[in-house]
Image 1 (cartoon, rainbow, N blue to C red):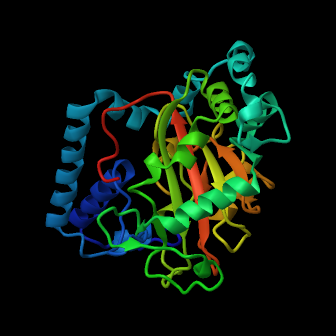
Image 2: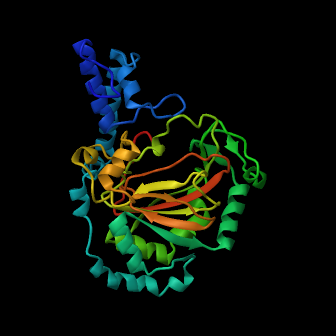
Image 3: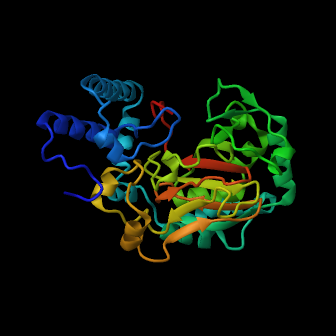
Length: 356
């Protein structure tokens, strides 16, 4: 018997078949969550007798309904959803960095207008992302950080990214004394795509140069998010994004992240595993996008000591990541965190993930 899993040697064959089908559907569909959105561990799914025949039928029905939707809206998205999880496929969309010099020239003339500073050249940044999957070292000025905070304090945000939930008004006082909240996050989901500060950054020449250099073609703006993370009443609950996972959003994509409040190891720091965008066991590629149940030690054994990075920094600190690289979030212990992310891809799709 495998340690950590139930002994099913004496269980009914039919139930074992149901478990297998359910887990297969989870592999290519939604991660099971409880009523507050916390990830249900695989072991609990295996033991949960509430997964009845009717629930299995519902799961199968949802699976086919979702895929009919993709097929009718954009077949290219459906293909990407499965093919983009494989490294060889993703590598076929990469380009030779040496061919980027001509494209870089159109941006360098505007670098003086850039709102971000970097200690290294664009070429050096691209080499680091290509090798590690991430780069740390972007910087926003204190003035820009203050403008973002003013925007955040003057606009309503919405719990758990749900636009029709009650609006929440965040004040500066909450940064000094924040009670535990009944929700983990709140975003400016109704306003962020029209926020002039965000859209100005999304058009920043240095950001566009890095994006085009990594993507190998003119970047396609996908989305942005301005997000608060709060101390949470049920901090022991599992959360999807707190397991190492990959984002399967395109065959090639890149994200720019900025901390807009100070972040240390207890304030919702971002974690990633260097080089995991280029090295992945086949079964882990097959399940890319599904949070990894593997322990940190097993991942360290596979990727090596020194590959785990915990990103901390002062307000204004920024970093860049290929979201196929294994990454995860972490809970906020006491101080709320304001976080901005901007994503570029190589494609534009007519639909998106069914349940997002």
